[in-house]
Length: 92
Image (cartoon, rainbow, N blue to C red; front, side):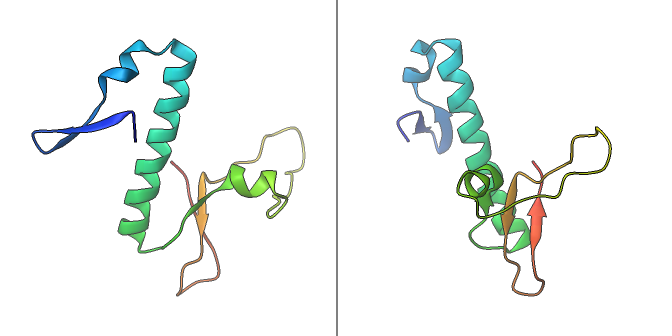
């Protein structure tokens, strides 16, 4: 939240962001992008509590099967439980 502020009813980056080195800016931008993707996906798809896949993978709570061959598998960025379905994934 320290990287955001509201100006004239709009959500904007705080001036503190301008002082960051490029690596820090990249991290902040990624996290803000994921936060807004999560917010909008939850509302659009009516799926509460979407979780970032990497968070679940690091805790060994989820595992994807590796495809045959050398192709890298495609994974969603966010997953959550849809009350009308078993599981839903959302790719940013």
